[in-house]
Image: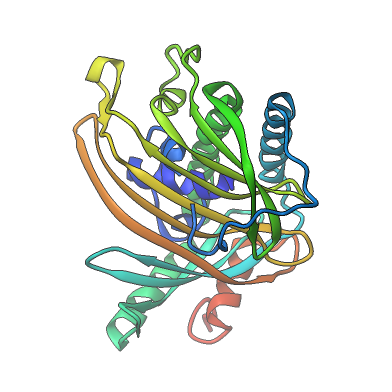
Length: 306
């Protein structure tokens, strides 16, 4: 979950490139749902949670989600489709020890033409020839993930959670928790944590594996950063995020829908974006980004200079 939220952070800040759109500014975690989850249904065998049990569950699950972002023993490749009102792109992504690597494979649901194929091959060749480019990308990924991690660490204190029932998802039953702003939460000067103010929504947690299956929310009012000097997040922004077990207890995001309007310093951000992640498959551990490029494009036409 955190890796996808890092993407959201990077998207707003304008630092995203290539594969980072698939995974992971100012804390858009605060507006998070899914259409992949099923219809709500009470599950008799699952007992209701007391207020103390609910708060403890949230703390335990968020610790698990944070720890999962540090685990890189199960890298994967997958397909990412990004859609906005004016454009859709499809990329194949490979996770490596050097960060994610992407190959563009379709634009507006159509295969790349010869010119676009040539541009993509040239981009990947440049990346292959200059490891510093990938190191720069990896550093950006780590910086964004660190900022988002701070937000997740603040989640238990930022909201008041309550048990709202049990719902059925493709993974099985999930606890359905609702949350409202905690009036006693003080983010201080922490810009990222300030994004958690004025949010309300739902958090769904898988009963069996204690992983987040859905995070949904809406901004209840405008939020100014540093009195409006750094920017403003406008009322009504929404984010829908879904996560699933894609095999062997490996949890990955499968969909995110982000709608928001904001002003960040000198930049106005208006977003209406859907990310869909699918076709997850394991790849070899310890793979380098160079090996990932060859996996994405094959051995012909790139990186093989006589």
